[in-house]
Image 1 (tube, rainbow, N blue to C red):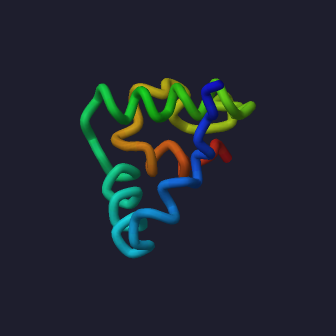
Image 2: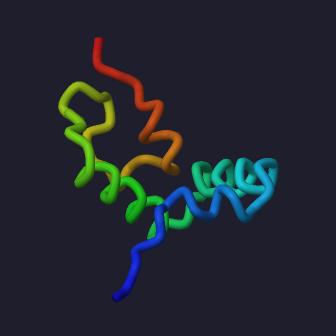
Length: 74
Protein backbone atom coordinates (compact mmCIF):
# COMPACT_ATOMS: atom_id res chain seq x y z
CA UNK A 1 0.00 0.00 0.00
CA UNK A 2 1.36 3.38 -1.01
CA UNK A 3 0.97 6.25 1.46
CA UNK A 4 0.69 9.87 0.40
CA UNK A 5 2.94 12.42 2.11
CA UNK A 6 1.28 15.36 3.77
CA UNK A 7 2.36 18.59 1.96
CA UNK A 8 3.51 20.07 5.27
CA UNK A 9 5.95 17.16 5.70
CA UNK A 10 8.85 19.28 4.35
CA UNK A 11 8.13 21.92 6.97
CA UNK A 12 9.51 19.56 9.60
CA UNK A 13 12.65 18.64 7.65
CA UNK A 14 13.77 22.05 6.39
CA UNK A 15 14.73 24.79 8.86
CA UNK A 16 12.01 27.48 9.09
CA UNK A 17 14.27 30.36 8.03
CA UNK A 18 15.41 28.49 4.93
CA UNK A 19 11.84 27.52 4.03
CA UNK A 20 10.65 31.14 4.40
CA UNK A 21 13.48 32.43 2.20
CA UNK A 22 12.78 29.77 -0.43
CA UNK A 23 9.08 30.63 -0.67
CA UNK A 24 9.93 34.34 -0.64
CA UNK A 25 12.21 33.83 -3.65
CA UNK A 26 9.54 31.80 -5.42
CA UNK A 27 6.88 34.48 -4.79
CA UNK A 28 9.06 37.04 -6.61
CA UNK A 29 10.32 34.68 -9.34
CA UNK A 30 9.86 36.30 -12.77
CA UNK A 31 10.52 33.20 -14.88
CA UNK A 32 7.43 33.11 -17.12
CA UNK A 33 7.06 29.32 -17.03
CA UNK A 34 7.13 29.24 -13.22
CA UNK A 35 5.06 32.33 -12.35
CA UNK A 36 2.41 31.44 -14.95
CA UNK A 37 2.24 27.87 -13.61
CA UNK A 38 1.91 29.13 -10.01
CA UNK A 39 -0.83 31.62 -10.88
CA UNK A 40 -2.77 29.08 -12.98
CA UNK A 41 -2.49 26.51 -10.17
CA UNK A 42 -3.86 29.06 -7.68
CA UNK A 43 -6.70 30.04 -10.05
CA UNK A 44 -7.73 26.39 -10.47
CA UNK A 45 -7.74 25.82 -6.73
CA UNK A 46 -9.47 29.03 -5.55
CA UNK A 47 -12.37 31.07 -7.00
CA UNK A 48 -10.54 34.30 -7.91
CA UNK A 49 -12.54 37.00 -9.70
CA UNK A 50 -10.00 38.73 -11.94
CA UNK A 51 -12.67 40.99 -13.45
CA UNK A 52 -12.35 43.13 -10.30
CA UNK A 53 -8.61 43.65 -10.90
CA UNK A 54 -6.91 46.25 -13.07
CA UNK A 55 -4.88 43.47 -14.73
CA UNK A 56 -7.27 40.73 -15.85
CA UNK A 57 -4.85 38.55 -17.84
CA UNK A 58 -2.93 36.27 -15.43
CA UNK A 59 0.10 36.18 -17.75
CA UNK A 60 0.59 39.96 -17.45
CA UNK A 61 1.60 39.82 -13.79
CA UNK A 62 5.35 40.20 -13.23
CA UNK A 63 5.49 37.49 -10.56
CA UNK A 64 3.21 35.54 -8.23
CA UNK A 65 3.31 38.22 -5.55
CA UNK A 66 2.04 40.80 -8.09
CA UNK A 67 -0.91 38.51 -8.72
CA UNK A 68 -1.48 37.89 -5.04
CA UNK A 69 -1.41 41.63 -4.19
CA UNK A 70 -3.15 42.81 -7.39
CA UNK A 71 -4.63 46.29 -7.58
CA UNK A 72 -8.41 46.47 -7.91
CA UNK A 73 -10.48 48.70 -10.16
CA UNK A 74 -11.96 51.80 -8.46
